[in-house]
Length: 455
Ligand code: PHE
Image 1 (tube, protein in one colour):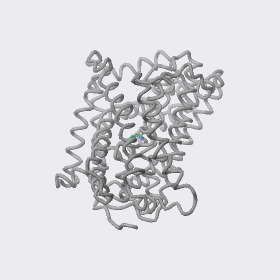
Image 2 (tube, rainbow, N blue to C red):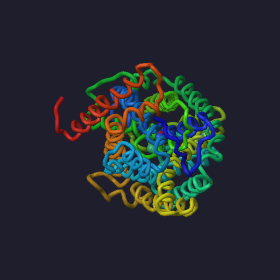
Image 3 (cartoon, rainbow, N blue to C red):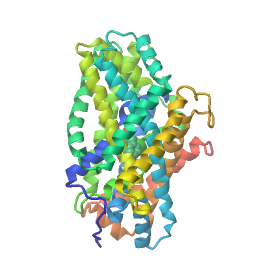
Image 4 (cartoon, rainbow, N blue to C red):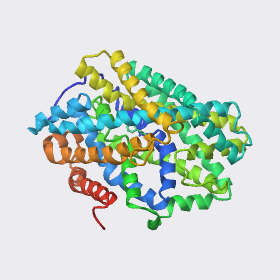
């Protein structure tokens, strides 16, 4: 049974356009900034392995589920779920899934704009040749002088909010396609260059074994939860984004193939970033568990040493900015689509209202690096608390609901029709994973992290 609804917000011109937009959303700060530092904080290899397993067993199936929900519902995430509840004859309480997701996405955007601001500021610093020949200490104090300054951080986050808002206001498609098409190959090339530099250091093998040799003594239950949460974060899942983007996807495009391409590109970028960063960490005597500053205190050292480092450095941070912006716009889109549908706002009004709210919440993150670093919520600073709440609680919870909704509540006819996997057993594999494997894994990791069970 096929349905032929259309989204009022528009439609992607092709499968390629969707793939680009979804890849643009997935590849972002999560890959280059967050993945290396959480891998470093959680002991490396075992964490990376759990993360890869989560991508494969949970991330990819959930992404398919989320995109299919969007395409069938054809509205903002919240309203799509309501539509699908009605279609399946289920209670509309499932719309809570849309609420958790969009709320998580909006909260994540509030720190995203601040970190994207760091990347902007580093692009300028690289252009000024500020990294040239600098020692690890000098690079470290460069970073500190940025994060110590609420004014500088706020200026940058304001700038990022405005840029993101303007793009979303003009409509998701205009400009996005070209940006991502140019960005991805460039980003790959620059990461390869950095991997080349990492190979020239004497700690290359040490970095590689840190990243890929699992030592399960290094991984706590909480570390496994962080890996799970990051699988959702990095693939832009459970935050309304894939559902919103799915709602603009033309009928007849293969959801499975597209999701595989997006997940593969995303994972490769993250691993390349790790391979580039950890050898530098070890060869300069830095700490792998330095936290959110890791990328910003390692890669500039490499740029400071290599010929034309100012050029490659600028290019790299400009790429990082673009990667961050293509993710930020995707984070803003679901809430904007909802405001338009629900509050009858124009696109301009909805974007302005949402951007402003996000910017205000983002001030909490700005201050958590300086004047507000003593303000603790559950013994975490504001940024740490928002990050923990969203990535480790809201995303896995919403992912669990998506898996249950698509595999148990929606009619099999509907999901089969959307996924359109032909006669292969792929549909059964997907359904089994979504029914049993993904929910069980999420619940086990959750319970273990809050120390309810022993395994
Ligand atoms: N996937 C993005 C990244 O890795 C972040 C993101 C999360 C974007 C959720 C959209 C939705 O940087």
